[in-house]
Length: 277
Image 1 (spheres, rainbow, N blue to C red):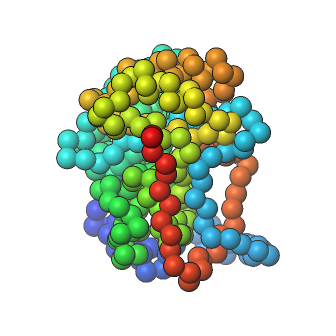
Image 2: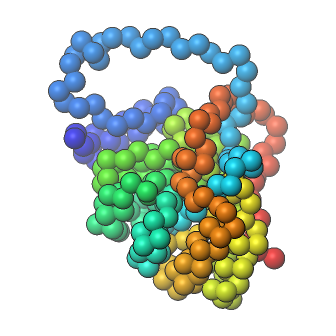
């Protein structure tokens, strides 16, 4: 499969930022020129549109729930393999949101994760900034596109969903993500695993108490000091006992699409997920 060099990618990224086109993988070198020259069929414009979605949950009418794990780009870029081992041993699908910096520091681990069909890979920005505070649209796109490129280069996969760092998002960032062919995917159930005072039992009790049909749970796989790995087996067992089918985000949102239009000029109101009381 063809790969872009950094020299080839940078001009393409600049072009993307100025034209707001979606990123696509490079064409294979043996693609016939005739096929490239064919004009794509005209698509009907939707009769109505709405701002790019900020998804926090799936259907509330099905006992499905998605476990998601962020691999944040940090100074240490740790990897808690115990989390992944539990998911594999319990045959639990999950969506893993990959930071670009984390991916570069854990190339082998990411390539291994991509071999498992039950793991879906998402985009968690390159350097883990507070996205609504990044006022330059080109830098917002760069955070997303650099991560798309790194994940594609290492795994051949193209993320479909973008998880904003810290759960912080606004209409502008969600719109820019949609121009990069990414759906902004937040959550309705923060596990609270970064809390240094939380115990494994409290984490289990909280998730089992708050889980609801269509829910999206956020946890982390990049800090060994978190109690996530210790709590995860009981979380999985407890959710299944409650009747939940554990699925990837893609399965949770299957057959769901959103026509999008540019957000209004009204003042932006950042959306931040709730935290454990």
